[in-house]
Length: 300
Image (tube, rainbow, N blue to C red; front, side, top):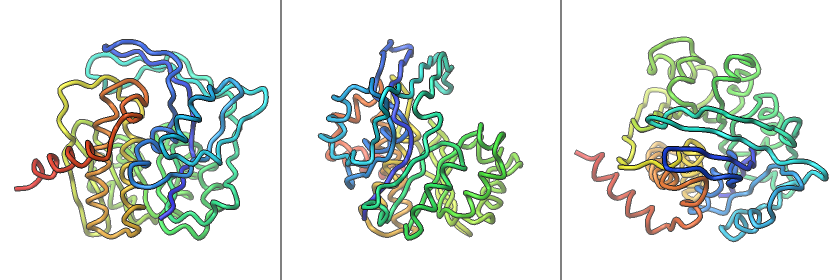
């Protein structure tokens, strides 16, 4: 039931209608790990620069994340992103992006972690994701994330990756863009024919859908009156999904539906504050309470 994540660790500057925060702890692997830690102890592989605050590493450790796979590049600067949200907060406007140490990062999974059962390849170059995948040939369940940039600029590389993972997670726009069809159901069928057993489609405030060959399941989002900062919501969702599966130590249709519910719930908490602040103080009791509410909302 071990869970490994490989992805970015960042310092984010966030500007939303609720306010502004600078140098918040962020990055796909961080949001994923802080969501997954409620179910298992995630193994985090990533890179930071010498400017990365040591208290952030200590926070991750204190929250139950194994940070033995986090490398510090001497003289380097940490990946930084500055973004602004307005209106319905559906889209972020990138103000500044500095890849820094992440730009040429080639992740190496520690030997002691190459027995990981569950693996999440956070959004990044599909060439890099595939290189990581091939370091983990015995993994029982590997899920990859991607985005429109890679679909447009590295389609063939992405298709090779898709053929070697068990599951793919995309948002609605990305799924239809990848499959080159406007219909989501048709897009899911096409993507599943390329190799993965499972496709999860994130639909933001409209919930999420789960596709397998011959099976479909959809779940609404948890209704919120206020969203403070949606940064990392998709990664938090994935962390809840993979954490739940790893805790169950099995991947069947029932557990996949259960995992979708937990991913939805954990992500709903994360957007209630800036950066990782809400995740840092979130409890399993809060997760279970909201999970029960969502079950009742989704049941006839």
